[in-house]
Image 1 (cartoon, one colour):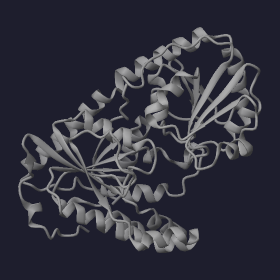
Image 2 (tube, one colour; image 1 turned 90 degrees about the vertical axis):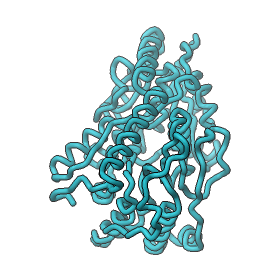
Image 3 (cartoon, rainbow, N blue to C red; image 1 turned 45 degrees about the horizontal axis):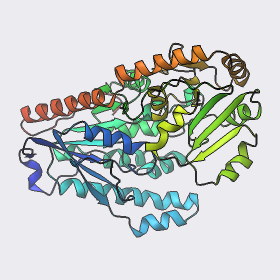
Image 4 (cartoon, rainbow, N blue to C red; image 1 turned 30 degrees about the horizontal axis):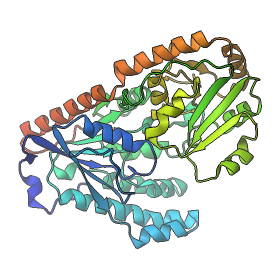
Length: 430
């Protein structure tokens, strides 16, 4: 159910600033973690023919990574936001339904106050409380509210949604996601979808075919700055160094694999961790990684991550869901093979560019590490193949160009339709 726009400017011909088409980006979680900023910054940096207005939650002050064609609009933090954070989780969820609604209204007001040619929504609006409470109390009507709040067709502008691994987070892969059904319901609001994972795009196409949903989707991966994350040959050393990058026990990741592997490291094998955590190094070590051959770095800035990748020989990513994450691609760009679980499509991680193991199969990985201590030529070859795969398909300039072409096509389609953006249509899945 679209909300009719009150601003008559929304009915006018899309505005262009000089030769620049304007893209209104809605990215509520842009500053919520270390991986979203590089993605959006690289996109804007490589698309100077577009102007980006980014609507997001109040952040740290943006750093120098942002190019001149990017400006920001902030969603104001309200007293409801502050109250939700102070309440116990259960009560916070209930109050959070109202904060979800308030946040969505704020983004709608931002959209009404801007003139733009297309909208690009990343991740989705902050409607998780509506989804969780709806699931907990079997009130799927709350999912309809969340979908309605996420629907921007009323702007009469083309709307593009980028799924940052949302469709790869499924319980059938071996790690529970109780919100999967809600995710699929809410994202029915989106008719034009970019998936950053190949597996996610394949799943979405299969889902839509089963449910009679008609929409456009593209596989456009995360773009990697292959100049910053440059190739470097393996160093000559006696010890084999394996690396891990991320939030320990992040959603979709094995809870047992990494600590068990660390406790059983063979001689001359070291584990180096670059973790994003509010816990101290001592706390992380005492809880999970007591071994002497475990090195821990906390909250390494993205600009310093190449140094970390170059310092290791192999990167381990124990993700059970089908999400790759930027860290896998960054490591490969630096010429480091990555080990992942082979329970789903891990493109571009293959037996030519890295290693695939059964989920939580520590024994087989220990055997592999024992062998790789004396197989540095093999590691070097797979690292070189990994680098070539990233340059060929994931270089940020190529990815930006593909995304820019989608922008241009959507804007042209909208112009040909006379300023209206009709829904593509939903069958029984609506």
